[in-house]
Amino acid sequence: MSKFKKKGSGELPKISTASLPDIVFMLLFFFMVATVLRDNTLMIQNTLPAADQIQKLDKKDRVIYIYAGKPSARYQDKYGNQPRIQLNDKFATVSDVGAYVLAERASKREELQNVLTTALKVDGETKMGLISDIKQELRKVNALKINYTTRIGDYTQNN
Amino acid sequence: MGRRSAPEVNAGSMADIAFLLLIFFLVTTTIETDSGINRKLPPMEEIIDPPIIKERNIFTVVVNKNNQILVEEKLMNIQDLRSEAVAFLDNGGGLLEEACDYCQGSRDRSSSDNPDKAIISLKNDRETDYKVYISVQNELVAAYNQLRNREFLRLYPSENMDYVQADKKYTDPRTDKKVKEKLKEKLSVIKLMYPMKLSEAEPNKTS
Image 1: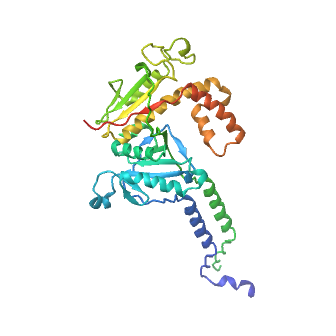
Image 2 (image 1 turned 180 degrees about the vertical axis):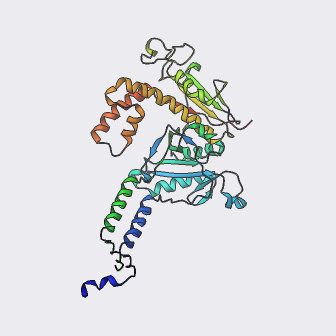
Image 3 (image 1 turned 45 degrees about the horizontal axis):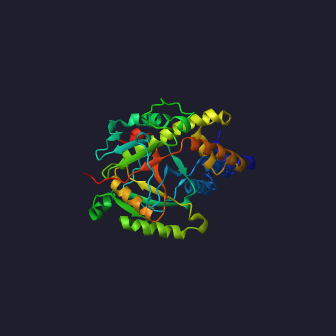
């Protein structure tokens, strides 16, 4: 009888794969949202010191970044292990800082040029001499608003 | 009895579940923003006529090349720096027009006259570690924030927050414009009471 025909087959039914694209898209969207895009590949070690009296630095278009620290392991044969400055993707010397800041400032929209902040992302192990030199260069080009970028944490973590 | 084949799972609602999860992650994930200590550098031009500042109004902090902290030429632990800076700023030892009516310090004549006159001078060596320098900066900012918080809570108890929270709310772009205007007024009053006068000397060469 046709009523009982279906029961005959013992195979497992195929699992529908119609929802697979959904899952893949979901993962894609998740990673798209959660990933922070880094515009600079760091060529230096950059463990920021910790501080808790901090202010947020939002509005990324108003920030100029300067990195400094010891070159990371794979650059050490070439550049040595003394702390260096990194601007964009290149190592730089103190004398390049002024020109870099001016170029960055010129590339921003005009109404933002007076409200720019220079964020110093410096490794905790760096000596203050280098930072003082950077600060002097910044004063020369009148980039006076700076931000010492830190991790959030107690100062006791800095030992 | 014949074996019953498993019924096919209905996959129609899978998309709904996926979207639900997607929206959940969209809402809960925050893209991290950088944060740090804001500072303003002094302009380059030379000051021709430097104002004369009395010794008692200056609080000198020196960080030497061995990362030791010297406050008023005495060695100090970083744990004590915050309370020491607060004591100096809040001293209010001035008389007559230089008196400070909101200060709660010891009114010692040999320490600062009032918070407006009090200057913290920070000097570091070229060999000082950056992380130590940041710790010191952090503690000095904390001293100012502590005093400002106290006064904000005292003057504006209706706001139900302290200075730091109010400042955060003020800088938050989501805050309403009207609220911002009101906060700005109150914040500037407090800033005038305890202005941040943190001067940084150029570092000396290692000797």
